[in-house]
Image 1 (cartoon, rainbow, N blue to C red):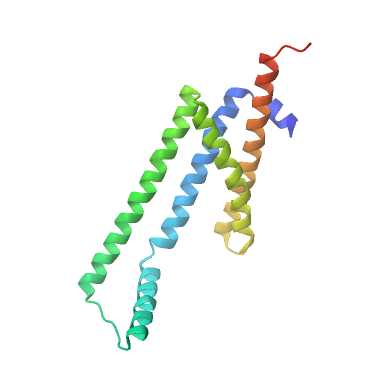
Image 2 (tube, rainbow, N blue to C red; image 1 turned 60 degrees about the horizontal axis):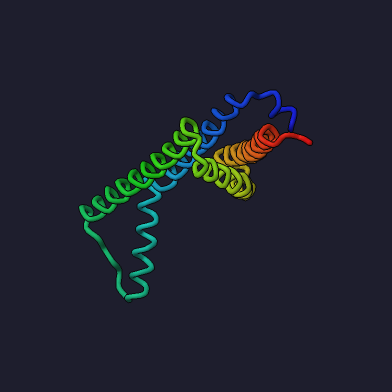
Length: 165
């Protein structure tokens, strides 16, 4: 792997350091949108919740269609808000690292790449028949590669700073 990092100049690797997480962020957002932005799934979940509440209370619970429509709109608005804040915060972190080389931003990217590099493949192996999960596997491996590359370039910078005796 050291050869791969050695063949990639530092400027290109720095760009990959923000590109890989940004692509992962978009992928995660699309996964969450697919799961929670699905009206059919929302209706099934609401029906299940109402059935459970009805069984606990001893009588069926019915909600007006207008109320259900408002719940759906609230769900979508909340989802869009959360995903937007998530993306905005991450883009700010990536830009702070890329243009200002802030140590805090790099620390965040290192933590993100390590944790996502471990957790995304674990998430993926539960259902490899699902093509979306194969994407998580690929992105997780890319994050591990990125994390190791960050360590490689940090060590290379330390060697330049400290003269060899």
